[in-house]
Amino acid sequence: MQSTKRDTASWQAADKAHFIHPFTDGASLHKEGTRIITGGEGVWIRDNDDNVLLDGMAGLWCVNAGYGQPKLIEAASEQLKSLAYYNAFFHTAVPSSIELAELLAEVSPAQFKRVYYSNSGSEGNDTVIRLVRHYWDLVGKPERKTLIARNFAYHGSTIGGASLSGMPWMHAQGDLPIPGIVHIEQPHYEALGSGLTREQFGLKAASWLEEKIIEVGPENVAAFIAEPVQGAGGVVVPPSSYWPEIQRICRKYDILLVSDEVICGFGRTGNWWGCQTFGYEPDLMTFAKGVTSGYVPLGGVMVSDRVADVVENGGIFNHGYTYSGHPVACAVGVANVKLLIQEKIVDYVREDAGPYLAEKLATLNDHPLVGYTDGIGLMWAIQIVKDKSTNALFDYDKQVNAICREFARKNGLIIRAIVNDRMIIAPPLVISRAEIDRVVEITRRSLDETLVELQ
Ligand code: PLP
Image (cartoon, rainbow, N blue to C red; front, side, top):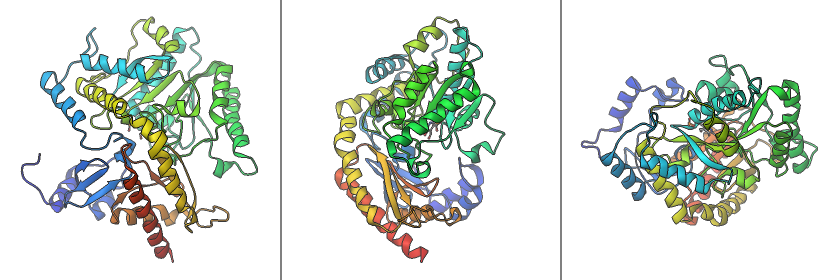
């Protein structure tokens, strides 16, 4: 609770003076003024001036259980009262970290019984780099060091995470990627699949992995890492032929398959994990965000028996974080996973909210600015186009999706403008049908206003 309410101008002045924001152009932030968010309930957030907005992005794709869930709040406060901190280093653990590990094993595919905790998705993916290289050292194949990732992937912002990511503008700052990380093209049918059916294209996109493995030398490749559905890269849903073929190629060359489930995990695609939606069996899964519904930072890696058996019997793995298995984060994780189970929220996404959002978004396809919609479960993209007949995009400089995002915000809806003129909608998983109607109604209105602005 804030004891005295500060006015927005005062917050903005202090923010400008003292706070460097992530992934933000400071000059434009200071010109426009920071929006100060002070409250949240369900799918709604409130700003410092009591404006209420529907959060169609679940924060940063993370508030899966919605804002203000009493059970998560109680779990945090009870844990803070009993034991705010203890570490997991010196043969110790706290009950909440063990209970969460047990629960994660319960909701994960059968090959995953063990977890390695981090505090974020980025640290989870850094853990992946270290873990796979350590694994291959332990099994006597130390030359297997290279990780293959994809263009326009987002795997985080640490040196390792940003290197695995395939965002050119990130690589341009700080001489990334680090050595031993290479990229292939993404399975983006509309952009790259001309002349092929979707399923043909899925196989072709998977064949780029095999080509890269051969180029690097199979004996040098440690792992392939990818998101089930590329999130920050634009919500690019791969053809159904893609993932099974990727799985086959990884098995053929004995390459570890890593599923970055930081967005897709904990129900977003309508199953607990994206790999279940797309039918593949990874060796490692990175998670973060939805594990605590973003209430407190927590991430980690689900480690399959194949890898865990070797690493746990391989001496000390010289890796870890002060907050690995943090009691409060894990207590909230336990409450959150139990809530998702008890309230059948993952089923709700798969059987009700996801199909309903898909159906409603399809009604936007007649709009002059909408080329098509792409998505699954509760993660969707609206492709903004200049020409519906060819799906040609506007000039990048026009930033049409950013114009639309601003109209949406003015109309009371948070949606995200992302690479290649896509608008992203990924609300809390508890969104009701009536709230989905509102999302789509405001989106249409904002598209209409964007069209007028462009004329
Ligand atoms: N992996 C994916 C797929 C993500 O979308 C993100 C963040 O958006 C990350 C990793 C990095 O997670 P964090 O921001 O918690 O470090």
